[in-house]
Image 1 (cartoon, helix red, strand yellow):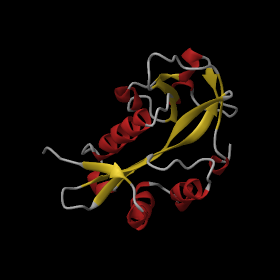
Image 2: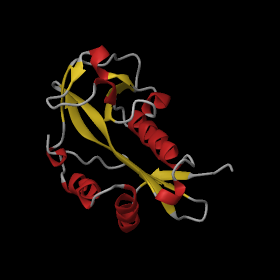
Image 3: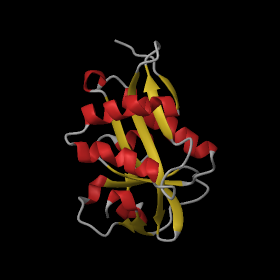
Length: 170
């Protein structure tokens, strides 16, 4: 079955539906609470980089969020929680929201994105293993799970340690 998703930046009216998506998609409320914590942190939150995927009728089914981080001293983005309602997983809603978020970041002139995620999923968006580019973190994570992407290939990825926004707790 082919799905058509409408993607757009979140609005204030979307916040309760995004919360429902996060609570349904993540195993604990602590993970779902991360979106709320990032939204409340004005050093992490960037307007226009919280994207939703909706059915043609308007029901929100997916959400992707990019927040501020740094690679060394270079401003970058972190692809934070990507969540999809359980009944819509594997339908392309998460991919649609992620692609929309990355396009919005490019449109805003952002250059770099890092993600901690499944190594079989994120390469489809152009992410590669971060360690190959000299990018690391200060906590234990499998090497293949930390990935990075240069949104503008004219600007190669910087090297350094990723500094996440405070709500991530690392």
